[in-house]
Amino acid sequence: MKCQTTLRLSIFYYFAGMKRYPFIFLFLFFLALFTGTACKSKDKTPSSENDMDAARNFIRAALDGQFTEARTYLLPDSINVNWMDIAERNFQKADAETKLGYRNASINIHGKTKVNDSTTVLIYSNTYMKNPDTLRIIKRNDKWLIDLKYLYQHSADSLANTPVLKDSIR
Image (cartoon, one colour):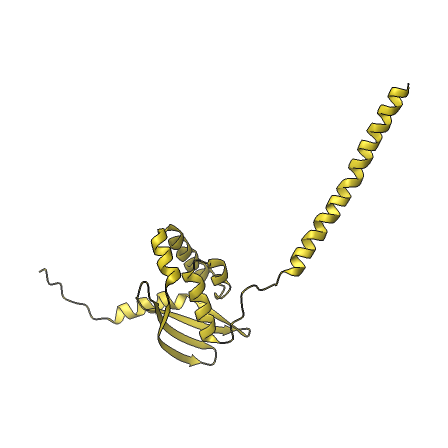
């Protein structure tokens, strides 16, 4: 009889402990979760003070392969997000030497046109690839953002305006 009582008491303590500990573990989990989120800054990326700062931050993040950070400077629409996804996939597919070349590259500014108070067009290149690209920087809700659509629309427009060269093979 004593053996059964001891067994019942140990089973009781086992289940009583199991009922109590999940609450303690849940409490500790939520405490750690809230403490962790409270300590983190809501916006890890530095805010851009002006249009050139936003462009520099965006280009540097993209060259370094930090596309999550680069997306914080991107004008959030489906076309821009799609172009950014393509750029990220291309960077991931590149070999290690190419990635290192981009990371070590400097940004060269070739021209800047202030369209109005909230729009700037920037022509730049990097020292690794050396081909000029164009970005439009737009101010929305007191934040400078990059519009990638302009890069591709601008390229298409400029191709239409170039004269057609005659084929020398004929």
